[in-house]
Length: 230
Image (cartoon, rainbow, N blue to C red; front, side, top):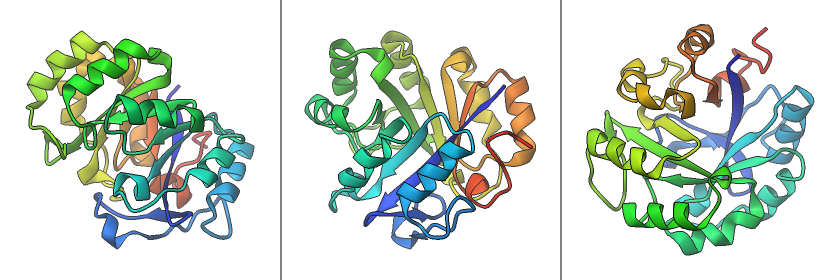
């Protein structure tokens, strides 16, 4: 069965929501799991409803505008956190290890492919999730330019345990996942965690395709999808 991993985006100590990665337009999150946008309350209720882990993106860290590490450390005592903290190199990876049980190494923020290799050479794969951030069907990065096909070759060499396939263009849209991407990365199917626009109607299909995990934000917080698929 497909495991739903709840998503929380944090900004200024609060949970926020938005569409297609346009962070300047993000607003306070309205979630069925809390009466306000306090991430601690939301995480606690997610655990009570059966969540096994939680994906948190610290947008302030990613945008270099501060951090939410105090909140994150508290939440990690409730639910194991998969943290996207805007890691840029091996030094920053090592720093954030104390705040979460798994860290995201994302193409958006990592300085180079060489830094990805350094991280995987030094640290246990169980603590690392490699995130392929996709926008308009291209690898999205602030620091390097590489085609999807060429990055797939690097993936074969790195051989991570888990790979997030995140279609940023679909985030918050409830428009369905980009099935073309699944086909393009079919050789990594057992490792994939999908994210971006996933809807209730897709859950069974994704599970039938052999996908084991999916990141769900908007459709979970608005009550369309619940953690038990009921």
